[in-house]
Length: 443
Image 1 (cartoon, rainbow, N blue to C red):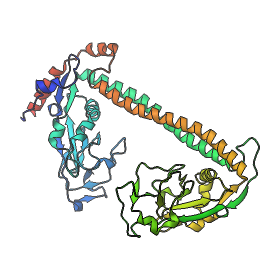
Image 2 (image 1 turned 60 degrees about the vertical axis):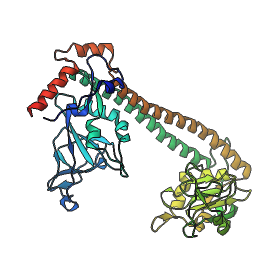
Image 3 (image 1 turned 180 degrees about the vertical axis):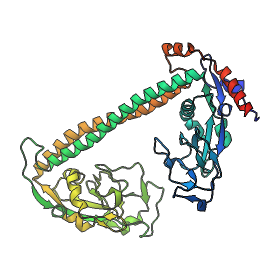
Image 4 (image 1 turned 90 degrees about the vertical axis):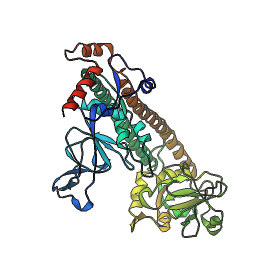
């Protein structure tokens, strides 16, 4: 029988103190690990020939494994009741309940002893998965067999394990309901925002209705142009903030310029592309791809330029730039400009399309009144949105707090613990561990 490496007193002294009847153990003490092996590509099929074959977390949909691959030549078969751990690549550390199947080299399968609760073990590993991920090494991050088998968890009696799992799932269910309600509120806010914009551009948001006439954007533009690709112009990005700030469609969000990921080009690019030099107050409008139609006002006072996926709309004094930006981000506008999209390699609008887009037009004072009414309502939405985001973050932290308490023996209250200790088959973790060892010795 393989020797199980126990924790030393020095190692235990560095861990949180556990309640009486608990012990710190390595995973190696309570289970067996299967390391995945991959058949050749030619030996994998999608016609359901052979046994299901799992290669990574992309086959886990959050509730069950999606059987999308099969093989008649399995290199590593694992039984029902395993915990699958992704040990290589971008998905390293992803954990999910396994099935009886073949597993590829990016998956390890941990089979807990029948003497411990499966869900308890699953939650215990998930609780400290960040510790495991930090151990992933190499250009392609990877976990070794020892990383997993040496992983430390707290072990208690089987009755207490079951009680802890029951309470975790009860609390998680309540959390999930709260999160679902928060996300529903987020969706309702999106609908409300669009309803505000729709009424605004129908002239119905103000106390007195406003008569609108349809005008082309081009009727109020000093300039409608776009930038160019640095590569086409022979320029590479530089890591120097004293150079030219370069705006791409990634930076143009709905209603704001996101500069968390700044790009810079040599100043020489601006000499070649003077026409697309940005001015404070320009409306930027995405022309290409998934972000098509996003609009925002450029309010920076640094030398900047744009690429070919973003249009500059520089307005005359007859059209308020905030008014236009709100309109371009409204669904009623989107329906119009998407009808003009040309889909070649990917959807795109031309500068002529932008020039010919029609907007509901009213006098400048009326535009300013509409903008004020929009911002009054949407500022309330922004505050609620921020509160929702804060609560979602709190829920995420609370989930971790629940797991932390659970596996330090602090989750159950006195009544729940009394029920556990009163069970006929209650036994301390040390006794349970000895029974696990005996079970393994018999195999």
